[in-house]
Length: 224
Ligand SMILES: Nc1nc2c(ncn2[C@@H]2O[C@H](COP(=O)(O)OP(=O)(O)O)[C@@H](O)[C@H]2O)c(=O)[nH]1
Ligand SMILES: [Mg+2]
Image (cartoon, rainbow, N blue to C red; front, side):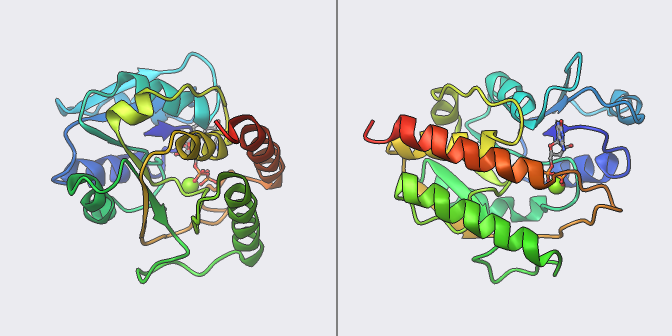
């Protein structure tokens, strides 16, 4: 769980994660929070929780790379520290992994019969364009490349070298998973998007950086 200034949601999301029967361990990587999140984290008392503190803010990519490196359970899922993604959906995410049909599972907000909050139109257009561009390089037919819900066999994600520090990590993971020839599945998940007033931080600059990373890793991993 990458976590940066999420004092409004951290308690609730940790409770939801720990309530899931699938949760063997929860590694929270605090990315230099300055809003009191760290004090809240210090009060968590559950043997399954491990808290890692980044010295300075380095970005979501750096935080999840640190989490991947520390993971010990058989499967790993990325869980944001807001309430946009619901751990109740771990059941759906885990099924292809537990049946040994998938090595990697993407949770799609767009190909989903599950409830989702109706919100920013232009965000969804941006997400679809980024997914389309990524698919053109990877030749995967994903519907939601940018989704937070990416689940992996632990040995698979730990075998992939990742370098992106910020949101470029999503296209980097996607390109490298595709290049590795791993079995990728997708399942529809619910999505409770938040507004900027509610704390959303991602912005158009992150979209531009995503395009850059799709092309960079698309070219680099093509044919490999
Ligand atoms: N925006 C942002 N999020 C970070 C950072 N480091 C860790 N995170 C966490 O990564 C996740 C990013 O969330 P995401 O849904 O992609 O963006 P958001 O909902 O617009 O904030 C959240 O759990 C953040 O707490 C950072 O430097 N910036
Ligand atoms: Mg979010």
